[in-house]
Image (cartoon, rainbow, N blue to C red; front, side, top):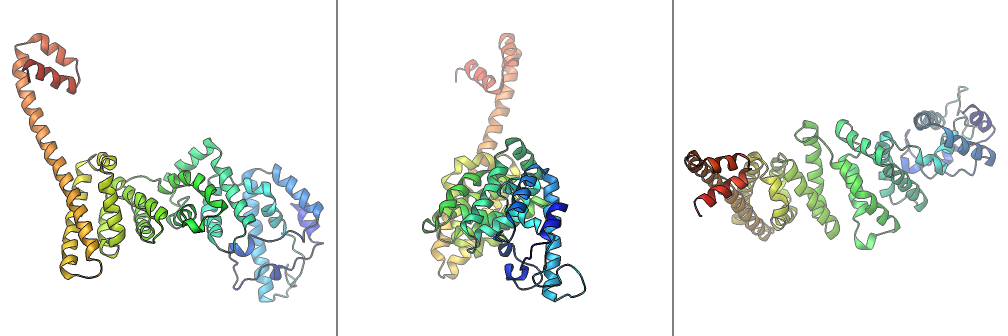
Amino acid sequence: MDYVGRELTQVRFPWLKMFPFKGPWPKLIDVINVPVCDIPEPIYKTSVDWIKQVPVMTLSGFIVWAFRCTLTHLEAQQEGVNSGKIGEQPTSPKPHAEAYVSRTGQDSVYSLDDGSGLLSWAHNLLPVVSNSDCNPQSRDLILQLVEKILSDPMAWTMRRNQAIRERERLIPPPSFEILLRLTFPASSARVKATERFEAIYPSLKEVALAGAPGSEAMKQVIKQIFTLSLKLAKEGNPTLAKEATEIAIWCVTEHVDCCEHWDNLYMRNPAASVAVLKKLVDNWKDHSLKIFSSPRNTLTLGQTMKSFRLENQKAITEGGANVSLYKEADKYCKLISRRLSYNHYCLKATAVVLAAAGATAAVVLSSNMELKNLVNSLDLHLYLNAITTAFNI
C-alpha cells in the first residue's frame, strides 16, 4: 500500500473531470466505469499481483477506507479548498488512487465473497445493473462477482443462515424487486445477461425470502414483498406477473398474518388480487396442506375471504369500471370459502368417527385378547383396519 501510494504521487489525475457529478457524493454509476489508462502499467500489474495475495477481509476494509479518502479529496476539490491539504489543485496527485486499481483488477471482484460481499452486491451493485447507463463490461463484472459468491456451497449455506439472523437483510425487498425485473423482463427486453440472472435467481430468491416466521422483523419484510408482488403482477409482463403471483401466494400461505395486509390492499389492486385468487384455486392441492396445517391458518384465510366478499358485493352494487373483476374475484372467494368449510366439517366428522370407533373398540377389545394385543402393536391406520375387520364393514 505504501509502494502504490508513493508511486501514484507522481501521477496526475483529473478527478473532477473523471467524475462529472453534482453535489458532494457521487452515485455508484458515476464511478463504476472509471478508466485506468492514467495508471502506469507497472503500478497496475504490481497492484493486481498484490490483490491476489491479500486476505479477503483486509482487502475489503482497505477498499472502504480508500473510497472514503477519495470522497474526501473530491469534496475538497469541489469546494476549492486551498489550505495545503491533499486535493487542493483540480488535477493534483492522489496517493489513494490505488482504490481504483483494486476495483478494476478483475481478480479483485472475486475477493468479496463473504456475507458482507453479498450484502454490498445487493445494496450497491445490483441497482447499477438495472441502470441504462451500465455498460456490458461492468454488468459482466458485477455478475461474475455474485456468480463467484454462489459457487461456494459451504459459504453459501452460512450466508443463507445469516440472512435469517441478521437485522440488515442481505437482499432487502427493494433489491429483490430489481432482481425480479432483471430476471423476468419483457420478451423484447431480454439481453445476454438475462440467462445469467435466471441461473442465479433461485438461490438469491431463497435468501430474499428467508426469515423467522412470526417474528416482527419478518412480518414487515413480508408486507413489503407482498406489496411489490401485487405491483409487479399487474404491470402487463406475463412472465413477471406469473412469478410475482407465486410470491404473493407464498406470502399468504407461509405467513398467514399477511392476509390482514392483503385485506388493506385489496380494493386498490383488484386485477392483481384476482390473479392471486385464481392461482390459489387452480393450485389448491399444492397449497392446502400448508393452509390446513393449523386451525389458525384456516380461520384467518376464511375471515379474509369473508371480508373480500363484502368488498366485492359493495363494489358490484356501486358499479364502475372494475365490476367484472370483482365478480370474478367473488367467484374465487366463494370456492375458497367452500373448500375451507368442507375441510372444517370433514375434521369434525373424522373426530366423531374416531371417538365412536374408539368407544366401540374398547368394548370389543375387552373380550378379545388376541385382537387387543394386535392393536397395541399397530398404528392408527392399522388400528381402524382391525376394527373394520372385526365388524365386517
